[in-house]
Image (cartoon, rainbow, N blue to C red; front, top):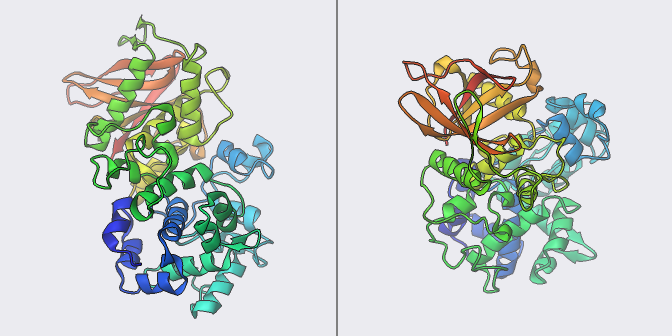
Length: 457
């Protein structure tokens, strides 16, 4: 059987141009036939599900090794058992690449760990893999690793990896024939990293290529690829963006623009927590439900799990701030995909948004401005520091206690913002605008307002 580009595009409407060109190519079906991936629909569904997960919806070309200390401890707990160790490698991609990939996977020379990090549709990793598939396909991948995601090569490299991989004596094609996503994931990933994400994408790809019903099809709104909310669901970097299991599916009638969707989602959570509200001075005028109450502690657990992929924390872990997990959860649900730097630490994505602005990165989802440089709009994030000496120009390498809220309303003289873990709840509060319509630096509850992340999605 053959695929057409429209089918692929229905799964990832905003894929990057390089991958789009690969799938549009006349050679795409030739490659899939060569490796017998297109022999049946289940093989296609599993193959594309793995690629979609590895690339965040066909948006990632090269593996990012930019991690906060806390995220390092989550991703590689054995390598980073303590915060002190993690801090030595945080926010340093070359050093981290050498530490986690060096002296294995054929990475024998200094710098190989970073040079041969994950790339392409299946995020091929390690010098041995680059050499192996380069030789087999007649591509000098060792000297030119960036060719791994080139439009002329990326699909066949992924197909060759798929063809050469297996688990418990079965090839990927055989595992796909058995609809064994656990086995396929072991074959491709070497473990079960991102398994729920892969299941998410498999449900989507089965909606395109498999006659076998996808689990919970009705709840996931897969009856038609033309459903009104397909783009919102498919255009994410993770399965954690839409939580069907907890009754948190996107509504086809949700606001169309990203900023409006983010604001709507934040306001829904504010109402769910009892509409806790502060006045302009930061004093409570309506008290909502708190993080430790039933079932609200479980809702905080959802923010941790689906916002930053941490299933160990809930609202009963009172000593661990969850406000950044809340923001990350809102961004995922609104469909930010790979264009937001999800983190359990606000300062990480604030710092990256500042860097993205300074470097003029065209695909960045947010740019962080000084307060006098940007008038707030719905969907923007306001940025606070909980430490003296932190401002837009002084970021301490992106490592400091901070906070962010979502702008949900913009009036003539003030804005309304919603944030998590404010007064141990989801809270709405106002901030004054000056006569020109800008925010001004202020202090509230020991937090200093210093920046605004402009939504570009």
